[in-house]
Image (tube, rainbow over all chains, first blue to last red; front, side, top):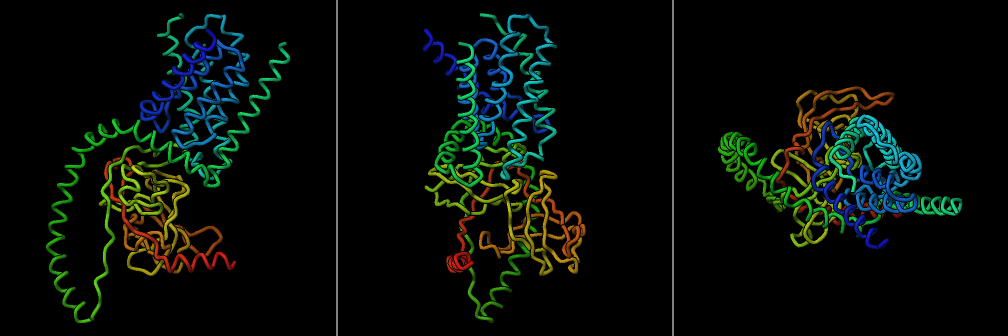
Length: 158
Length: 275
């Protein structure tokens, strides 16, 4: 039962990475794209224990990195975000939030994730993080928060 | 029990973060070549259906553009033909040998990332088409970039809008040579450095590859001068260019089968070994 649940989540994760790479990567506004993988990981944090979420964040981040040639950036940012954010999300998952509260939670998580991404990319000289700092931190986070809120509206609880 | 789980989480997080840092360091040092080759193959297959849509979407715009170019080129062709005749006569007189042009491989853009952290373009030609690492990529407007990774069917290009891109260039009409790079100030804005302040550079002048780097053949148009600023605390000036090739509308290109002169390469290797 546990194994089949893991396989199901793993396959959903791979599908989400595929959607992110094939579709969402091209839906850019001012150079920013929504991060569906991050929204999925945040949702996972409300359902699963921290160890599992950290492993999923690392694995999906690595998969995303390998397909976007950003080796290690998303893996680092997503794992660190889950490590910091998991307790808060898991603890508050029993509450029923209003849409603007969901928006703010996803916005804060996305901003923190993009900040980690920007910081680690700045250490390396091979990326042009400075060029997209505004779109990455502000517009990218907003875009992800809008996507997360929308998915929260249309979700089913089962 | 909770404490044990927490310790486990700390250890797992530390391992994943260390792994991520190792990947970043390897990428920075130019490693992970096989993994990157595999990833561009997978990405190319994922993006191929989408690239066809992009090609069709661009077709109308390209058509209008090509019609306009055709009129200009027809006019130019008639002038070139007369000049060529004159050139043949003059070459015969001077006993010069006609230098052979580099063959080209026509390619389609399969995937491109132009406003991200790491800008790159993937083309649908690889080693099976004779493409090698280091070959320049151009289109009818000018220089696009250089092949950096190649597998059997696909090639990844470092476009001019990447912070790692460098090309030796010269300003048309002068003997001013410098290095063109992208400073991340605008998508098509490039910077030409190392030009002495004594050289007069004017707006609108053409900047092309110099051929000095042994990486690109000479004479590939790069862009035109938009403004010139004196360098801070140095005796050189900073020349800003607007690249001729528009990467955003790019859907087809050519890979120039240019290979560095082996004699020059050996000399450079010897020099590196010596110092």
